[in-house]
Image: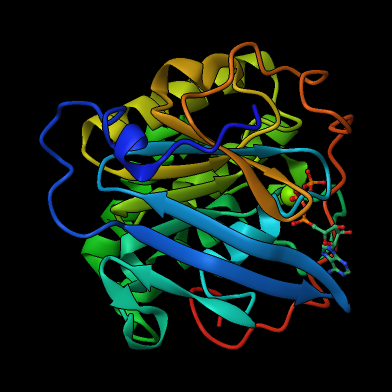
Length: 274
Ligand SMILES: Nc1ncnc2c1ncn2[C@@H]1O[C@H](COP(=O)(O)OP(=O)(O)OP(=O)(O)O)[C@@H](O)[C@H]1O
Ligand SMILES: [Mg+2]
C-alpha cells in the first residue's frame, strides 16, 4: 500500500474506452492547505482523466474531504496548482461541468427544503438567477426519476432516511449532466437498497462518459467500477495505483467511523460553492 505507482503505470490502468483524450479533468499538483491552523494537505498530487473513476481512500482525518474541497475551489491552496479540464482554477468558469455531493453530516439544520428545491439548486450554474424554464424543470424531474425519488418531490428533505437523502443529493449533482462527478463518502449511512441504487446510478454515469472522483470508506459494491485508487495518509499520497484489495473498515488503520467535520472554518473564496 505504500508503493507510489508512476503516472506511466497508472496510465496502463485506464480502460480502453478511447475516452482518455484531451486534458485531465482534475490535475492537482503539490497541494498544500491549512485548515483551522493545521497543515492538512502536505503536497497532494491527484489526477482524474476523462471517463476515469478514481477512489480517494484513507483513514479518518487523512485529508480526503479537504482534497475534494480544494478541487472544487472551496479550500484555497497555499502551495501547488490546480487545473480543471485543462484550465487553471482562476480561469475556470465551467462549474456546470462538475457535480458535487458533499459528505453528509448528521446535523439536521437550516431552513427545511423540499426534495425538488434541493435538486433544483443543481441547475444554478446553468440558469443563474433567471427564472426556472421548462427545460430546467424537466431536467430536475429526470434526475429525480433516475434516483427513484420523483414521487417524493414535494416532501421535506428532513423527513427522508439517510439513503433517500443521499439519493436527493446525487440527483442535485446529476441535474446539470456533469462531466465530473465528485462524491464524498456517498455510501456512508446509506441502507443496502439505496447502496445498490447508487451503484447503478454511478454505473450509468460512467457509461455516459462521466469521470468520477469518489471519497470512500471502503470499496464495497462500487469496487468493480473503480479504475484507480489514491490513498492518503496524514495529508500525503501513500499509494496511487490499482485499488487495494479487500479494503474494509479495518483495512485502513484508524478508519473506524465517519465523523464529518463542520465546514464553518473553511474559507470559501471561489469555485463551485462560492
Ligand atoms: N473545519 C475544520 N476545522 C478544523 N479542523 C478541521 C476542519 N475540517 C477538517 N479539519 C481537520 O483536517 C484534517 C483533515 O480533515 P478531512 O475532513 O479532510 O479528513 P477526512 O479524510 O475527510 O476524514 P473523514 O474520514 O473523517 O471524513 C482532520 O485532522 C480534521 O480534524
Ligand atoms: Mg471526510
